[in-house]
Image 1 (cartoon, rainbow, N blue to C red):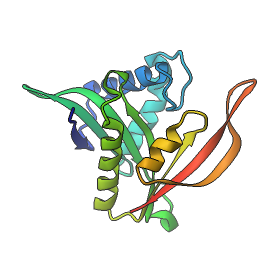
Image 2 (image 1 turned 90 degrees about the vertical axis):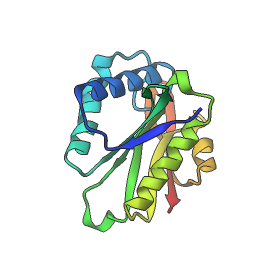
Image 3 (image 1 turned 180 degrees about the vertical axis):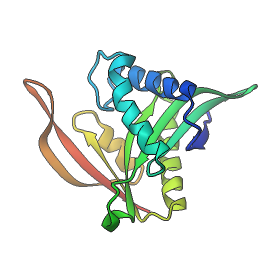
Image 4 (image 1 turned 45 degrees about the vertical axis):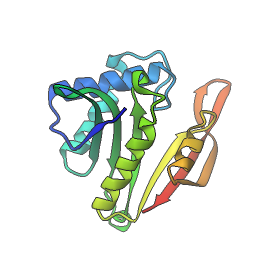
Length: 176
């Protein structure tokens, strides 16, 4: 299965709703994208709105992948944001956030294709490095290692999922 990627597509109401729906579905399937299930689109929308604001302002980048159909680009299948810390001394790198593949499209290698597109965009931006963090206990760190990222730090118990469930916040980077 292939994806057609678009970088910084127009932030139409339709696209915003598609991203929020994808984010909600990924979260409810157990994806580590900032929420714990169960969540609704109303829960996700305010957080997504902040991400859209960064993209609309021009500092952040949005990458969407659609599964092509005979009629052209089809359903939204993958999303990632590349965010700017807006600090002059860190202009040579960016943070990758909210990497997600819709549950209906998982198992086809699309996450790796999405991360390759993130890398392509980072290189085109003239960046030297991409950084991200991920939730311990999910196996996501192993996925990112396969995508060329290396762990450079770990905040033990940095994420509190429940009163008795603390997870490490794993910090990773990829040289470009």
